[in-house]
Length: 298
Image (cartoon, rainbow, N blue to C red; front, side, top):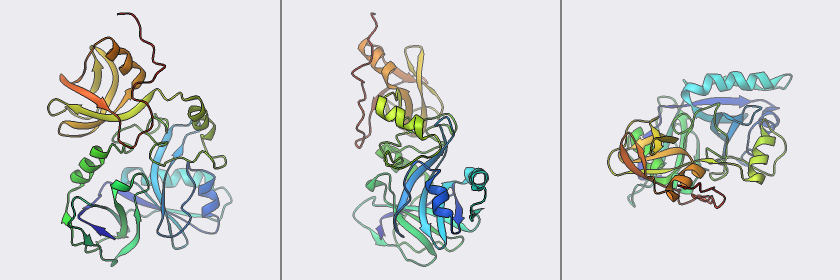
């Protein structure tokens, strides 16, 4: 594979799920189908019974089972949660974050370079969006030679923000967000054709009824935006909050129906006193201004 920018993602960890029953266990728990072959990956989540995201991760096939690329500070918790579901299954689950490192490579420009396979355990195209590039899992302290531009982790997140791709723990809170709100239906994080999984009934209901009132959208400020978590206000009414930020660009989880209401009334949006506008990512298929949004009298 070739990349022109390459960044170590120190905020990512790895959980291994191996053994004869690994595939059966995961397939019955996560929001998406497992990757069909080596070198391919799936983006998925593990939900609460109430249908809210507890963890989001990439699943890639590896020797003897699967590796899950997950937020490092959630890796141990994910391992414990999977163990609760293991019961009598012949599965081994382990937090391998000290054994592996995760990196991302993307085409910042046309000056791309080949990534050496040395130390690589798994590499795969980011399944959320082609423009996100590649992800690489390698042996710890054996970072592959890449020959590309050595980017920072902040540069990776700026790239992600520019494309409108959200990330758990940065753009939405674990345990308090439905998959549709986090764009799982837009970035290939959920299968609507697979069998049952934890929280499946709620996700299916939101899909068929179109009841996702909140969505993560792109936010552009007239100047540099304040810190993550700052309320997005319509006048004095909070209708959302900022997530990941890069200068005047950010992602935000917003009540789109309320945003439409206030726009119809001519009320501007701000965050920390900074005027801002909302836009949906280029890949998104949902309406930024729902046609059913009520417009109360001024």
